[in-house]
Amino acid sequence: MSESATPAAIAASIELARLPDAGPFAPPLPVPSLLEARVIDNARVGSDYWRLTLDAPRMAEAAQPGQFAMLTLAVAGELAPVLPRPMALYGWDAARGTVDVVYRVVGDGTRRMTGFRGGDRMVAVGPLGRGFIIPPAARHMLLLGRGIGTCSLTALAQLAARRGIVVDAVVSARSPDALVGTDTYRRAGAREVIEVVDTNGSSDVERVAAAVLGRCGDRFDEVYTCGSVRLLGLGATLAAASGASVQVSLEAHMACGLGFCHGCSTGHPGLTREKPLVCADGPVFRHTPTPSAPGAA
Image 1 (tube, rainbow, N blue to C red):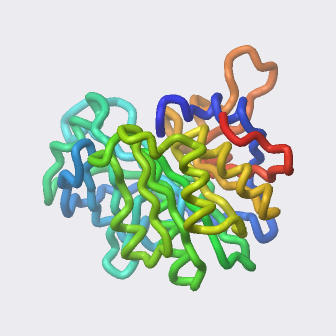
Image 2: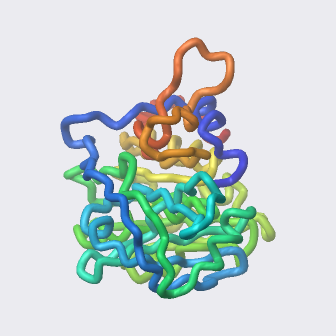
């Protein structure tokens, strides 16, 4: 997620609601597992990105699009890093029992993560959180992702394709070598995959809107987004025209991923009441726009 797409920034720009506990928009909530997973592969897949594949059958069997895992980077005999890292589930294969995580190297923790090799063991907890929901009547979905935020959307495209739903996707990044997810979308059968980047100005929200309307149309049953406040605003505008709603996946620093530490509130300092937690109440939230919804944030 880009720095501008913090939970507080998103909550301040567009009103988000927790997904309900019952009804067609109630996400399945499998019981997470604590695993000592074997690393199958951990390889660079771009300028800043790596793909980690874990042997984690119980997690793969239960995972839903939009969920995440907490990965411990300390190995046996080490006391640090103390806190695990939350990572979106990029994809999984229940038959093989494998789970894939695509991550960007941004600090000491993720740099350390690149040191894991095939055969190593990694402590993992997952799947965690409330994932995306596909409305029963959905026939056409729009996915809007920027940077590493796209990794929260890839499994959703794969599930939608298996259900015969038309998927159009926007993949946004700072530069062409920072784009992630395009090949996965295309293998899943996405109808349109629109790549936009900062370096040539194509990621400007007005140009993205024109590209979506020109190549995908203006009628969607549901819009999904992660990684950018501006794309969330665009999604709200497009959804309002279609009478659809927006589901947005948030990312946040967290210590447990289970709702115990309360370190990932979507609120900001000074509030008198705690806002929903990204880990336990999300990471996916829902916005039902009106015709007056803002176009950008």
